[in-house]
Image (cartoon, rainbow, N blue to C red; front, top):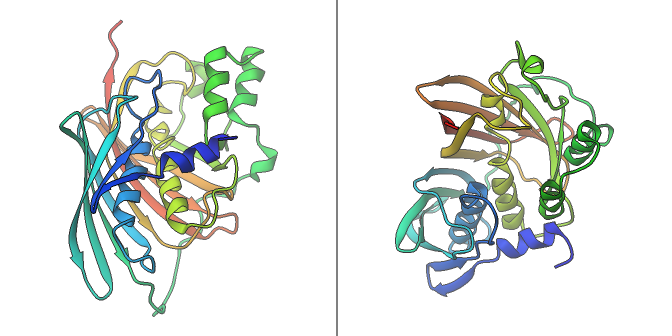
Length: 290
């Protein structure tokens, strides 16, 4: 593999070990738990591999039940819930070391002629991605150099991420900040032409920055964390075809945080302002004790 985008395609290429059972690789990393977007993306691959190719996914609903262990393979068991004339439904259970860590229900829809169409415009206008610095460039500008751990992470990152608003580094900078964030994203290389790969790659990316919107009023996004956070559930609705290796804008907001949980909503647009995907996620937030 020559770049992180190709490594992502390999990560999403599951091994079929039975008719409706797949095995996914889980890279050995320094993270405490397997990245949730990886599990969601792989589970959607498993679901899609059991459906007819002319029915793209239109929605998914998932729960993160237990943290996954890096370096240990994950087995995905698919249940064929329904095969109808227009809709196909699949339920996927992700198992690691004999325990369920994640489950997902996905619905696939045969494309139909539009009866009508409408869309609210994007919430705000933003600069083009080419005019914005990469995360690595912002960190280098602030720290003078990129720490070795972040350098390694940047080389392995399959997505080019560019924050619309400059990163905040101190408590003073977050004072009065609204719970909103927006990033431009695309994979660092081409993904090929399989629509399922692009859908699953974007599903992977949808878990990367969404909970930032919850944290922004509380602590800087970069620097020591004051909270342990984890994704609890995740829902996505896919409205239009797209390519994850072309720029898309991920506009995120948090309408509420209470009871140790924060809710985040995301809208993914293409460069022309077309709404591609809607995302909702709730995360758990607990103060770290040092």
